[in-house]
Amino acid sequence: MSRRLLFPVVAVLAVLASYLTVTPAAHGSAPPVPAGWTRIFLDDFTGAANTGVNTANWLYDIGTSYPGGAPNWGTGEVETMTNSTQNVFQDGQGRLVIRPIRNGSGQWTSGRIETQRTDFAAPAGGKLRLEGSLQQPNVSGAAAAGYWPAFWSMGEAARPVGATNWPSIGEIDLMEDINGRSSTFGTLHCGVAPGGPCNEFTGLGSGERPCPGCQTGFHQYAMELDRSVSPEQIRWYLDGVNFFTVFSNQMDATTWNNATHHGFFMILNVAMGGSFPAAFGGGPTASTASGVPMLVDYVAAYTSGGSSSPPPPPPPGKAVRNANGPCLDVRSSGTANGTPVQIYTCNGTGAQQWTYVEAGSTLRALGKCLDIPGGGTANGTKLQLWDCNTTAAQVFIWRSSSSSYYNPQSNRCLDVPGGSTTPGTQVQIWDCNGTNAQRWTLPT
Image (tube, rainbow, N blue to C red):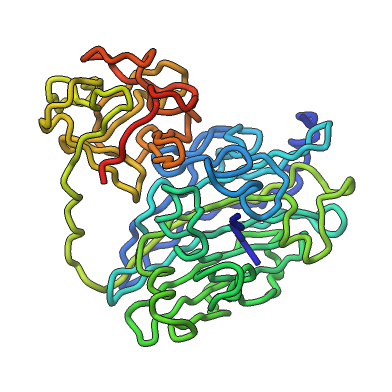
C-alpha cells in the first residue's frame, strides 16, 4: 500500500518554531562499514545550514508527477514537491530536513529527492544493503492526519519513463509511517497491477509494525537483497532486527528477476494525503499541523560478495538527428571539458556517435557526457561536453511521446536555437514546446 504508482506561505516564525520543537539533542556519524561489506554510497548531510542537497548525489522531484507519469505521484497525495530550502535543506548539524508546509490558501508543498545513481544492485551471488537513520515527523493525533514520510527505492528502469512501467521494475519500501502512528511498514511491489503475485496495489508487506520512539529519535531502517542464498530473499530491519522477509519462491522466477535483478535508486520524501493515509483515517484536514519535518541523519548503500565481473561495455554509438535534419555533434571532435555541443551535417564521425545510458538518463559521446554548464537552468543556456559525473546537469530523460530530451533540474528540453539548421549552431536548453527544434531520434 505504499508508493502505488497507478497507471491508466506560512509565517516564517511559525515554521521555524515547528521545526525547533522536534530537533533531537544530538547527531551521530554514519556507522563504520560492517565486516564483509563494501560501502558504495554515503551521504551524511554535513552541508552548511539552510543549504540544498548535494546535487552530485541527489536530484529533486518537482511538481505533482514525473514528466509523463501518473498524476499526484500515482498515489492521490495532494502536495506539490519543490526544491525550495523551505521544504528540503541541510540544517548545519549533519541532518537533512524534509518539511511539508501548508500556505494560507490551504495548499501543501513538501520535498522529494532521489539518488542520482540508479545502480545500487545485488551482484549475482551477493548482497545489497540499503540503510538510513531517520526520525519520523514528531506529530500525532489529529495534527498528524495525512502525514506520509517514506524511505524507499525503485528499480532503475523506472527513471527513463516516469515510472510508467511500475510495478514490474520493482519497488522496495524500507520505511513508511502514516498519520503519525509511530509505526513502520516494509513492502515489496512487483509484477502487474492490479493483482498479480505481489497483490497490487497493496504489495507484499510486513503490515503495520510498532516503532516506539521513532518520532522522537533516530532509528535505523534497512533492507538486504540477498542473492547468495536459495531461495533469494529481501529482509527488512529496524535497528538491526529482521522483522520481515520475502522469498523469491513466493512468485514466479520472471516476476522476481524483473523486480530485483538490477540497479535501484533511493528516495526520501514526505507526502501529504493519498490512498495510504486514507486507509487509516485520511487527511490532511484543517487540524493537520504544518511544518513538522522528517529528519535524516545519513543514507548508505553496501554490497557484499558475488561476481566481480566488470559491467558490459555500452552499446555502439549512433547519430542523434534533429527533426529539421542536422545531427547532434561535438564541435571539432574535441574531448576537452567545455567543448561546445552543436548541430552539424550528419557525417557518421565519432563526434556524432552518441549512446543513451538509461541507468542515468545521459547522452554520451567520445567518452564524455552532454552537460549543462554549472547546472544552469535558464532558457538559452548553451550545452557542452564534460566528464560524466552523475549530476542533475547531465540528466536528459527521453520522452517518447514528444521525441524530446528533458532535463528535470531545469524543467527544460534539449533545443536548437530558433530551429536553426546552420552547421555549428550550439544547442541549448529551453522551455519544452514540442516544436521540431526539440524533436530528436533516440540512439537505440
